[in-house]
Image 1 (cartoon, rainbow, N blue to C red):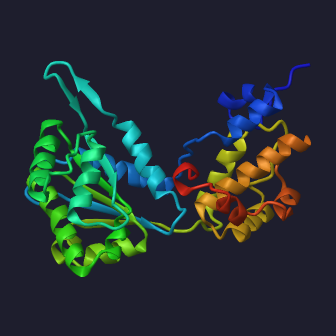
Image 2 (cartoon, rainbow, N blue to C red):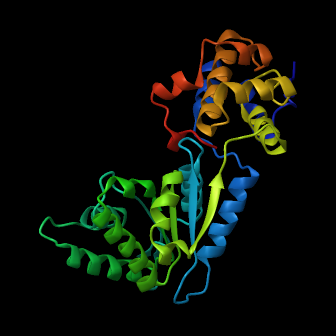
Image 3 (cartoon, helix red, strand yellow):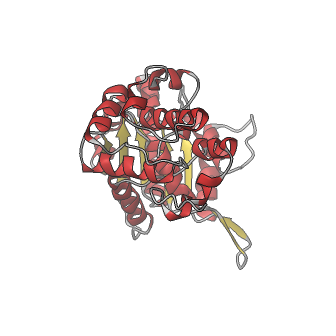
Length: 302
């Protein structure tokens, strides 16, 4: 007997025929599911990557509450612009360099983190001036066109003096290298950057708001419904299901994704093979509990 599994996207129909344990692995695997706001941000990042050099390069700030998927978007962009070896010049090119702001940032720890992202050796004896010189030369040598700094809100954990120094450091790199600077973090990141008027004027701000019960959310749920290898059609896009899902997750992306994954796994294990309103009303699994179990934003958001 042949089953078509027409409720799934064509590329995922064969997965529905796999054994239960293999389908559970597919459900739990990291995936990218596009949605309109993410595509707007990715398109803008692409525009900035190819922006012609000028004295004051435009920059971008991506901010959102924890769990909304900002880091996932940046990683998606980074994957689309991988490092590549230039055979002619004999150089490893890194068009996009990304790092995370240290949790207790100062200028030296920032440069140490940046050098680690460049896979460059760091000697303990190096002072800040030497590090600054090495960073500037390396980024020029490898042809870096964009610098991404995540978790910028960590700036507020440093002293006021260190904040000023680090903001000057960011402005220095953007000016010296003439490349766009992309910063990401919580709403506090916006506060941190706006304390420097010269930097604030350069940054175009993009927010990732919590999900609402609208067309974009319906399309997101339809995408998950089409890729989870369940043998029956789920009921995620129904009005009642959408409301329940938002009520249980408060519209936070990481909670939505983890709850859907858990319900899909449960559907396979119990033989129910679908997620419906009854599944969403089941209080055994909560998105908050799943987050406490160690599921982090960076590996969870679409």
